[in-house]
Length: 521
Ligand code: FAD
Image 1 (spheres, protein in one colour):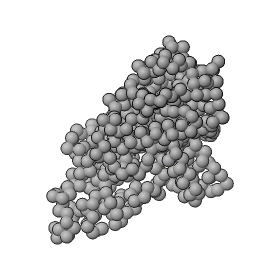
Image 2 (tube, protein in one colour):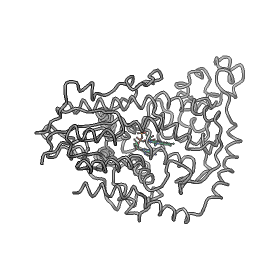
Image 3 (tube, protein in one colour):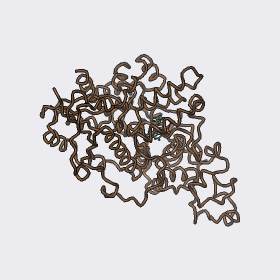
Image 4 (tube, helix red, strand yellow):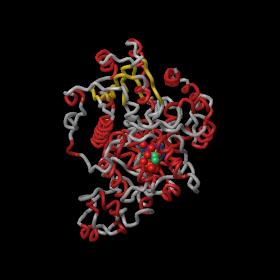
């Protein structure tokens, strides 16, 4: 039978390692590569302008690649459950393919869509390619529970074996006999909107350091993989949060949108490592991809993963509500130059180093301001190019010592930490030009500079740059005691485990099992 297929791009904005796209092309007469601008996202999450730009560029890049295969990308706005049935009829669709998503919204969306597809007699083929492994398999191999430590996680995936090899991108050969019926008014009806078309305010757009799209992702990957010694020696804790040029790959936005396949990244690293001495997980680049996989697994296996309440693994903490302090943190007005420089880089450029994320996350939560990690998660969700539901929630829980990491007495200093890798404060001066003329001696603590020094620097603390919001030396000790009390109240580990076992038997597993079975048929 010849099929009319829709391949529905959601993440996975690429042609390489896209098994669901390949499945769409098999025995196919007409293929419609589709992207839906789902209003759920704009209504339920705040997406910053830099991330919108990244997405639009990724779509343009995808369309350009599809054109080379004599096909096109069709962009349609509207809820999937309304748009897809209309398209099924209009295009006489017999098959729908997509990459499996694991987040709760996506899971319930796909369940609805699969029900509808059945009503319309449309075969559905979901394929796993956003993660290295089938996440449900990892949970199953760990007796139905997500592994709660990296070491345990490593041992489970070691038993499973290496991730599958990526599949090649479709070629003109794969497209033989397959056509895309795009009309002359394609641009008008199905074209990629501009930021202006979407009604977005572009006045705050930052410099474009990381253009979206698969081509740029693969170019960046190639560039890094040529640095053999750097790749082999890579140890995350030894990279710098405040270098002027990023000290890690900045492939995260590309992996997040699926412009780069995690499996392609993994196997390219394996090629570089082959026959050489190299660093190992958790600190190596392979190790970083496993951290991603670890948090995806816990996000699937733990209920209410992006919240404190109802999340059985999250320590319940009596966080303060302090809108003024939260706004100061978000808007880079804490009076701690290291923290404010990081928050400025985040807003302007959409990417900050992992340890910079550590510093500002610790400062907002258990370190200094005692504000809930959920508030920080929201700000990151808006401003990060790589904002990812599972990774954002998992890492915020880690940094706030709410889950996974429990050494709450180890607090980052907003003064000393940055000095270790940037003694003279060049990073601070780049992002906070108001402090440009401060001598290195005071750049991390400008409030300590004598008035004459402040005058010479042309920056009076309290007038041109804020005074520090809190006294770090005093407040962090008080907060350690508050954290100690929260831990003391925490129910026993055994009780937590029982709740998680229950949580693991969530609906999500059964949906994915269903996906798997269908895919195998
Ligand atoms: P590299 O060091 O080059 O690592 C390669 C890849 O491994 C990354 O692209 C990423 O896909 C993955 N990776 C690396 N570190 C982690 C990690 N700790 N957890 C999960 N995956 C990792 N990362 C996101 O992609 N999206 C988020 O929303 C996100 N939120 C975070 C929130 C907080 C509070 C913290 C502390 C970290 C967060 N991270 C998030 C993880 C990490 O900081 C970024 O993935 C990393 O800094 C991206 O830079 P890179 O691509 O240069 O990383």
